[in-house]
Image 1 (tube, rainbow, N blue to C red):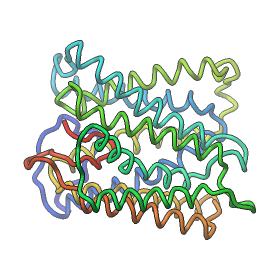
Image 2 (cartoon, rainbow, N blue to C red):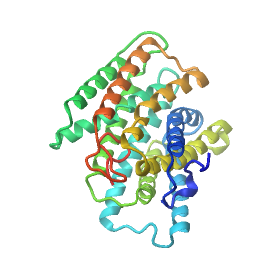
Image 3 (cartoon, rainbow, N blue to C red):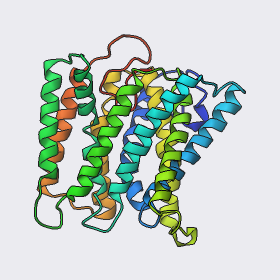
Image 4 (cartoon, rainbow, N blue to C red):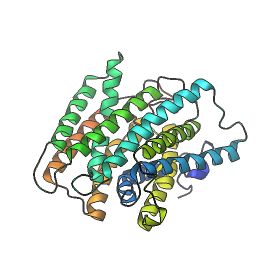
Length: 334
């Protein structure tokens, strides 16, 4: 391959020669790395306090990204006005503290209480469906097939969380916590396309990570996570998983994703929304023996089918580089 996949060293936003091979390399990076973050979260919280680990993840990743931008673009690289700063802080809290933080919390705890990583990923897959509902509530009118996909997806959600017997039953409280996380992430995604944000998505991400990590640290302290935290008690496996989340999940995969938004059709980029859950379920089953019951297979398949219908039927509102449809969970438009 003539060009390497996008990485943290390419964060200055320079255009790279685009080829189908490079696009698919970046897409596979997003598929695998973002799909694997759910399992990495589960391993991280085995011995690390959940919200503290999330705060550390985004604080370190945000700092690295800020340093790279500053070195490559100069002193004014991170300059934003007050309105943009307030907007990006709000979005960061909704996406990272509310969205990611609640997922981390749901995946922590003993068996029977913690939500398996594959289940968490399937529940998070409903984000595009919630964004469609938010758009509709504000006067937008998505196509009829989009609403059909939303309906199918929520039927799958119900099937997935219905109480069932046996060791493979989905913990209801944990599942509802992930649903709350998806609601927070959806609102943050929806607002990010409608309030004044920094034009550069990498600059916006720095401030989102800072805001999200600060709120996560405050809530972690309020829950007593700092008082009982002893770094020596954390396993090597959990530290490695946290490092993986910082680098692979928050820097490399995000860089590849933003690059794809500017170089590939949105209909292709959006496929990560239903590929990531499948990757997460397979990895959870293979690497940590998470149960994959018929209920999980049925509910998950219906959710993914609903999201696929939404992604296929939605189209960007405007043509041009970087335009996006309302189904994009991270940011709808910049």
